[in-house]
Length: 252
Image 1 (cartoon, rainbow, N blue to C red):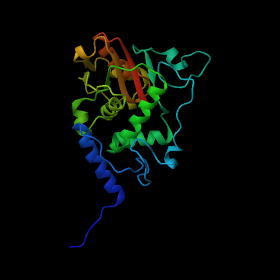
Image 2: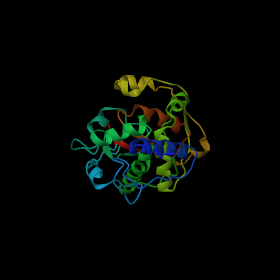
Image 3: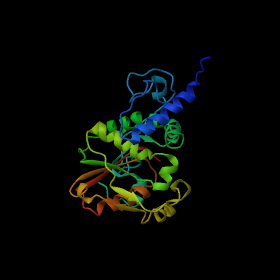
Image 4: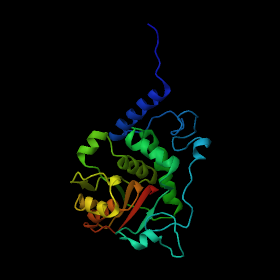
C-alpha cells in the first residue's frame, strides 16, 4: 500500500487540536519545536518564535497605565481613556501588545481557528511582562469564563488555557473562581455602553475560600473597554480578596 502524507498545514492543525484536548485534560504540552506563528522554522523552546516572526511583534512602549496596561497618552500616570471611565476594582493591570497587526491575527487564530499551539508562547510573554513590571506574586490565577454552551461549541476557552499556562510559569494555582450564568451577546459587536449592559449580572463568584484575603490574578486575552473585566472582578470582590490584578495579552 502506498504511503500517504498530510499537507504541513493540515498536520499542524491536527497537532493543534490534539494539544487543545491535552490542555483541557490537564496534560503537558508535547509539541514539535517549530515556530508557532509561521510553523516552519525550528525554535529552541516552545515559548519562543523564530526571528522573522518575533520581529513582526512590537510590545507596547512605556510608560504604561496602571489601570489598563496601555500606553500613557498624557502628562498624568493614567491614560485618558481610564481617567474618563470606570476605574474598576482591580489594583493594577499589565498587558503586552497593542491589539493590532500581527498579534491580532495570532489571537484570532488562537480563538477561532483551533490554534491553541500558540498558547505557550503567548502565556510566556504575559508572564514575562508580569515579572518585568516587578508586580507582587499573586496567590491564585483565574480567567474570564465563557458560558458553557459557547465553550462547548468552540471546544475550549482560550482565557482558561492562557491562565493555566501563566499559572504554571509563575508557580501559582489556576482555579475557576467565577461562572458565567448568562449567555450574553458577543462583546465585539457592541459599543461601550452596550457592553456594560450586556455583561451586567452575567457572572457569579464561587469557591470563596480560595478568594478571601488572597491576591487574585484575572487573565484574559484582550482588554478592550474593560466592561467584561469589571463585571468579573465585581463578582470576585464579593468574597473579599486582598486585591485583584489583571493580566492580558493585548490592549484594544
